[in-house]
Length: 302
Image (tube, rainbow, N blue to C red):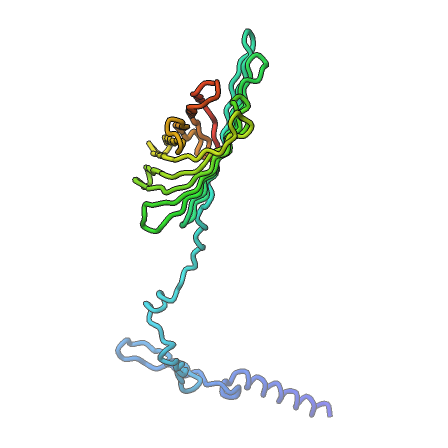
């Protein structure tokens, strides 16, 4: 019995060895025999294949899905960031201060704020100026002036209708407050990146409140405004306005302004501004007809 089992075990081991050594028994193609190549004088093995080589089927694409390299490049769209919205408001703040102490006491302060809103069809300009000064501890100057003007623009036309209003307070004038309102038509003579020149004609009224004469005075208006960039850092400007009394043209008011600006720090938009403001009133009610202010200011634009 034991011998029979040993005989069966030996037959099984021999069969397993035959299977391991015979590729045909494993279902594989046998290793081909070397073939003599007369042209080279050596034996070479032919290529081994497990069966006939079958090429993979080609993928059939619709004609509209077949794209040339040029079409692929054209289809690549680079998404760009949307452009920044146009800047509508331009604003600035200015401040000036000077004084002395010792044998004479002097203190002067000046503050200004300016804003301009520009859209395709109109421009709104706002200006505020405030000044206060004392000599030997006694108040010698206390004044505030606010101006507002709106202009309308027509496409490809130099004509610009406008309305304007102003409010003037001066503690050392014969009146407390002067109110002015007018309107008219402007004409843009020059307008480019470096220079702007515009003239204005119109009419309106003024009223002095808290003075000897608080009647409403009809007035005419003639004015001119000029700006020019001398360089990337320098700009000059000037403006003049003439307000004659329509009932008596010998009675009139006039204002004249001039300024020079120098950009000092482009990072902080810091400028130096040298400005002069002249005002004339033919009926000062016992006071001087002329007032001239000149100041050196530090201005910040934003």
